[in-house]
Amino acid sequence: MTLVTSLLEKWMEWSPAQLTNAAASLFMTGDIDGPLLLPLITTVILTALLLYLAASRKS
Image 1 (spheres, one colour):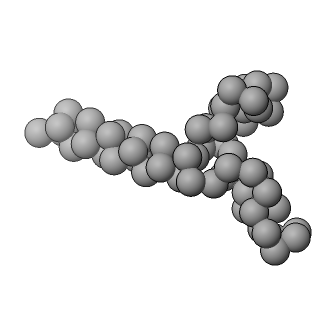
Image 2: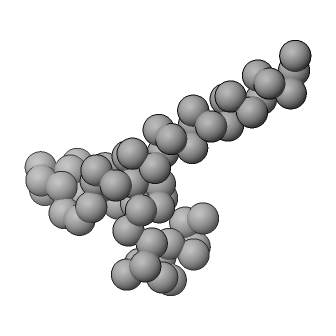
Image 3: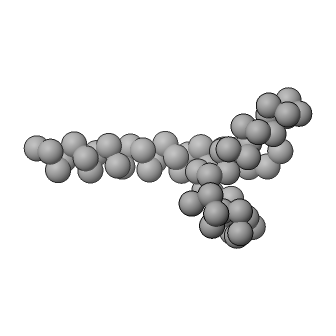
């Protein structure tokens, strides 16, 4: 996911892999450079979806 995101950065602003870029930017400069909200929302939704699918398959 990180490789595809780095190659297609313009079209992958929603990718959860962008969170590593935001964290590095925050650590280095103290400010977030680039998108943060969209990758964060995508990560939360994907996590909830995968947890739901895992729980429903177990039952």
